[in-house]
Image (cartoon, rainbow, N blue to C red; front, side, top):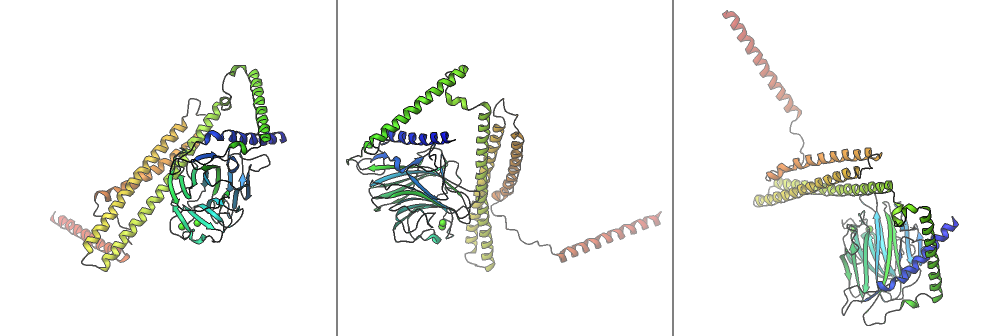
Length: 507
Ligand SMILES: [Ca+2]
Ligand SMILES: [Ca+2]
């Protein structure tokens, strides 16, 4: 166990060295909206973390300090778990020494609820904000915070959202209003429960702070969308990078997979040399470690090939996935996709419900207005209202159709997952898939029913469906109706018996 821990520790060191050695080629500039050429961009390993050997044997992250409920593991740091009232943060141990920078943060915010809390914050501040009330970090910071705010405290229906709040060290964060009075810029993005990790690219270059977001809908790392920009932003010349998160009454898992920092140097200015960063002595030591590992690996490979001459020449990585492993992985991936599809369905249903609610309230409003009686403009207004209602209805039908397609796709996926290959079929999970399939059939039927119900109002747009009114058939009406029926029936019986009597007399 101790040997293993030591090995992991050494692996982390070697990984750090490899990051440094690999840093130079990364320094090819990327455009950051600069005038007069792209800045020189250099990876800064002392202000970065990333799996797969993120954590050392003693549970710490090299060059980073973590506090509160933050739990580092091999491939991510869980800043908070989805429990109530959690706070955590991770901060660089060293102050940055560069004027301009770019950070790329990859994270996931996941929770079982439709609404989560509180959110996650990325920081650049003069001091480490190790603990505090602002998304798990200290208030009255000097610098900037980029807040991924999940919970809508001010009820303006603008969360989840991203806001940038600058502070000179004196301002108290306006948590109750989601900082809306203090925001320098913001954009509305839903970053919770996404199929892929969400990525934020934050650039501070020539006094302009820019935020780009990859919403986690694609695995493409460069698929960024513009979110917000602040010009003439003055930040402390040196500061700490950090990331923090908090939960409240509602809770999400806040996981950070990587935090990569790059130093940006304006073209023409002297570019720092990587050699000054690591002392020559350390470099030699790491190089030695690395060579030692390489030798050990080669030796193990040789031993393995001696023991398994039949698999000689095969890449070692392939040997680790057996047929059943692969099938299990396929099943797992299939299930994941089903899970996502169902989640998406859920969201779409919510949207439809919202639309329907809006539509019902529009109709009710229209009727109230008609009841009040505005004789001159009534015709025009009602026509407009009805048109709007019809449009909404069409949109609803489109969405339902989309959803139905989505369900069909899910069903297809389930079928594919059920027959992943000739060797499959012996799994107990078949029953499970059948259950899912059956369940989805029910969903599909319900949705088709919903579509059918919606269709007629599309064809006859003049008669939109009305909200349910109280039944017109009162008890009195019912009894009167029954009485009339009874009288008619008795009359008929009497008439028939008279006819029969007359016939008998006749014979
Ligand atoms: Ca909030
Ligand atoms: Ca809000």
